[in-house]
Length: 123
Image (cartoon, rainbow, N blue to C red; front, side, top):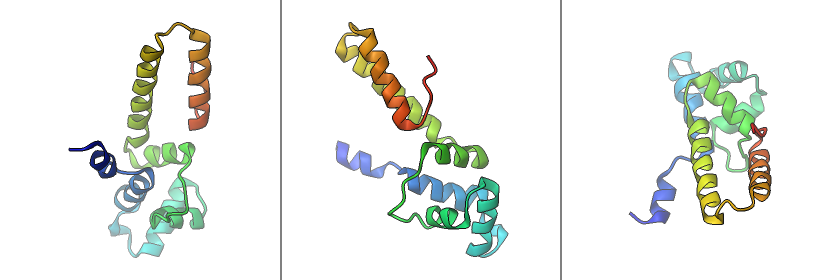
């Protein structure tokens, strides 16, 4: 399978969050869509409007790391942790390509990358 096809087949963050809300946080047994969105909103601590945008996977939104971690915590699913693991592997590969000679540069790169993800540097 080509790389482009493989990338397109992976679930996007917005789709993951939408499915987590619809299937785990507020499944159909809670009633109609409006009732389910209100339930998800309460469980997540989000506004109704934000929850509705994610519920319908509005193409104009982007999911912040903190929101993804919250969805993960409430739903019990592990998308974000898997993404973080993949990112750590990519960082290790980049370090191997750089030869690991300039550790200060590498630490700066890792700190900037984690900051971009909204995570604090754990080192």
